[in-house]
Image (cartoon, rainbow, N blue to C red; front, side, top):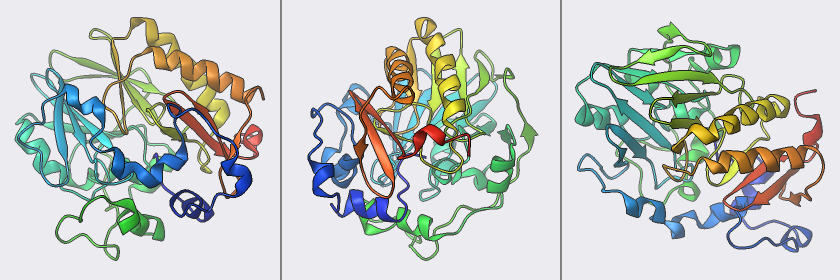
Length: 328
């Protein structure tokens, strides 16, 4: 999950209520910042998508791009999460890596792109990645306590915020309102674990458990092609690491693991904002995260007890007492 805003953090980012001390800490324009959220509509369309042809299955909510042969980015650009789900099509099966917010009908898009049986894997169980799970029968999951708890569905004020005017650049799909938006219950049909390989016919997808952002976070690796689907472990923007389920000790180890793969990768596919990143960013993420956790980077106060560490192309948003996360 990238941009869920809680309590004062929502006010601080959307309402411009950062104090004068916050505003005095400036970063170069190329540096990612949580404060960019308030103007995300102004940055659409993102320039990264100019490299791809929008597919005819795109509609008023989803934009669909074939970023590699038989790899489709299903993008929700008009909602502040800017979630990207990926449909990976093999000769026998297809894998849908995440199902988005559940605001638009993602199955109707998938059905236009493939007639293969679809297996859903979630990068993790935050609501903006499991919203369409209920539409599919085959859900593969690492099934931690956190992910199992999310199968019950979720209705909360946080989800109402996700479909509020502040979160949107256009009107909602017909029938979706702040009052009725929720994640619906679904069932896990098969448990998976680190090292498992999902053979979809002509492409093998290896499951990498990369806990940290959540304890059920995974990445997918196609070793033959040199492709990595990173989920929320990395994306180009503010990476949100302040939730109770975030463990920075585990995240540091997972980032090191992903960075070790960088020399063998051709592309990284993040779960938010832009569909393809240079694998070298994983090395920069590891180096800068290590510096942050060693106390070598000055944080920028944001609001509500959170701080941000800004770097070119991404930032790390953490609790003010970030050094104690994972030990509490």
